[in-house]
Length: 488
Image (cartoon, rainbow, N blue to C red):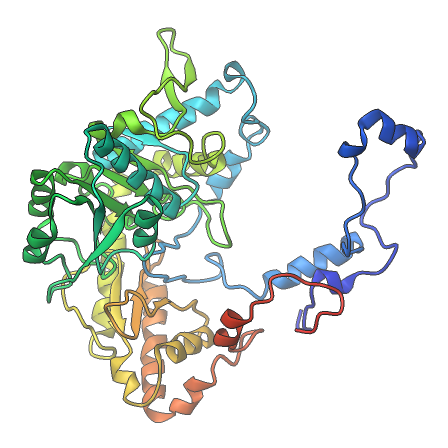
């Protein structure tokens, strides 16, 4: 388990196989003729030839290189890396779910459609919205879907408008989503409390503005105290309000975005509702809308006919169309529904309360040890900075790398951009007090090391399989594929 692990391509040995199939009883030319040459795959160039044990050992060894939520705390701010209950996995593996196919007739997947309808109704209740679509496969796709519906709605009124306002405390993908949907972006600077500046919003909210895209609680972990005044101002000028729901983990059961004037928001099932994520998916970024945007939802929507049967409705003339094949990452929806039903209204509320308690516990434990640029009441996460450690020429990256030696995954660093050297910490409700105390002690030890031996931090980590990488070189000269003889 200690040796270096090469690529699976480098383990290849000609003629080695992980399977043993009987010889074909049909000559190959006749087989090709029967199937059609276009349906017969040729050998893949440079494809690794390895045995079953080679494959098993290779990926098992690689798995030991990674930190995971099963191994320890994963305090990524704004990413809500909470524990994934195993009952969710067991239910999603039921034959009727795992073996279903999106091209099966509706009569054969009534249970699957019921899952989508039930979860959609529950999310609408949790968020205070009217309808939900599950097509977007992740949060950024949900953002784009939401903005596309805003454009379609305003265009139906004869005024699609030209730009979208985005606070500097919003999530980083928001400007990209707005731009892809055809809007220009205007940034709103935060006030001294890290929230939306009402005067700046009042001046910026002109007749050209289609919507305000805000994150609430924002990336500082702060709930916008003037949220009702904000939404009323935008609505009074003919605009709509989009809310990035990535931080819904702090709100569920406590308050509902629809109740304070949000028109559309995306929800990360792979964050708030405990489904696995990372490594590219699968995630899910369903979008919830109020009645004004309901006609523009992607097709199909799941409906119930007079007999009580579920069906997919494609007859929606004002729909923005499809944003993903079929109806989204269904297995993720099953897992999220398990989480909601297992917790119930009381449990979801308690999850939010514990997440808030844990973030404030860490804030209290590290206050004075690390700089706290916005000393405001926080919800699910708290943002410190490395300003105090920078006096000893220790960067936020040094702190993050050193934390790995203490057995913790680093928090989100260098974001939000309005905090130089940001350390964005979100413990979620998964962590008990014992784990939080260990994390606080580790962060305190690192702060002491920054004063007494800063060189130690600058060369960390020491205990991980892979040491510090040359990130600049990796970004400027990425090697995206392996090829025989390529020197890396």
